[in-house]
Amino acid sequence: MLKRLIYGSQAVEANPTNLRAILAASRTGNPKAGVTGALCLFEGVYMQYLEGDEGAVETLYARIETDARHRTPVVLDRTFIAVRQFPEWSMALLAPDDRIKAIMGLHGLRLPGTTTRDIAPDHAAAFFRALAATPNWMPL
Ligand SMILES: Cc1cc2nc3c(=O)[nH]c(=O)nc-3n(C[C@H](O)[C@H](O)[C@H](O)COP(=O)(O)O)c2cc1C
Image (cartoon, rainbow, N blue to C red; front, side, top):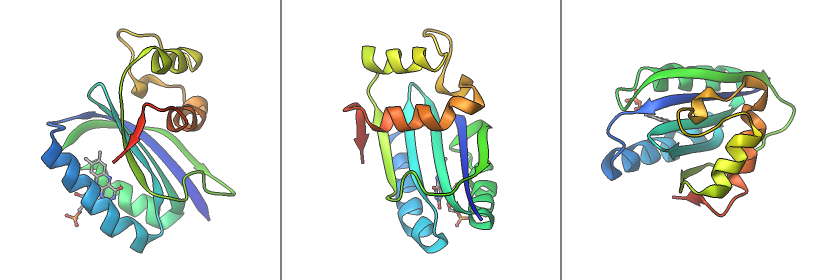
C-alpha cells in the first residue's frame, strides 16, 4: 500500500557539501525504491515528505532517522494515501520572507520561536503542498 511519511528534524552542519551528498543519495536510492517526495531546509530545520510503498518508505526512514547530519527527527504524519502528491523527487531550500511566515501562520505556526517541526500532524501535508507552490521553493 502507498504510504506517506513526513518528519521534521534539526539540521546538523547543513552546508553545501552535506546537502549535495544528501541529494545525491536521494537521486540514486529513491527511484530504485520507488520513493518520491521532497525535502526542504528552512531556518536550520529539515522537513521531508516521503511517499511510496509502505515497506520502501519505512526502510528508507529507518536509515534517514539515524543519519548524523540531523538530529531529533519527529514524525509529523504517517498515513496511507491513494495517490502521490510529489511524483517527481525534489529538494528545496526556502527563503524566509513574509509569504512563508503567512503560510506558517495559517497552519498554526507563529514566528519567532516555532519551527516547521511544530506543525500539527493534520496540517503537515497541506503545509508542504502550500510551501511547494511558492516561488520561495527553490528546487535544487
Ligand atoms: C535530512 C536528510 C534527508 C535524507 N533523505 C534521503 C532520501 O530521501 N533518500 C536517501 O536514500 N537518503 C537520504 N538521506 C541519506 C541517508 O540518511 C543515508 O545516508 C543514505 O541513504 C545512504 O545510506 P547508506 O550509507 O546506508 O547506503 C537523507 C539524509 C538526511 C540527513
